[in-house]
Length: 173
Image (cartoon, rainbow, N blue to C red):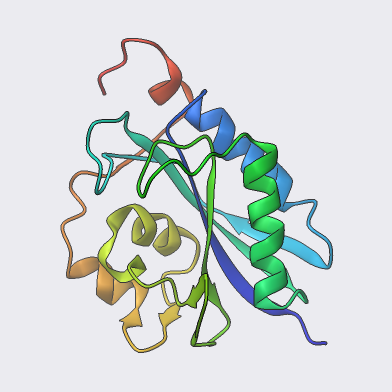
């Protein structure tokens, strides 16, 4: 099977979020039949949906993989569980969240897996890190990442210079 390019979003807002995301990158590097080809910087963003929780650290990884989309998702869910992810309610705080954003130009909708990720084109915390590593990437049915980014308000998402921008208690930047 020919390798396919997949993009995975990483996010965390519990237990040292920057360290959790960096550990997520490390775990992605150990996936079978998969090679990480790029990783974005870390970005800080306010929570979406359920607002009464800490800010998130977000990032995106590019992978070359021969895993099928469902197998890739299962591997990501296993990584989440190994990092203590508990799904209490939608948009709840989390130690590590891993989402398949894109898998080549595949468009897929099946139970528990929709590719492209259904709301990625509306979310600056996904588009900014994706634009950093793949600005000309096309989201099937939506357009290029750079075009989509120009159409949304990204002012609430901040690229971090270093992990300490987020993990230092009392930091308000």
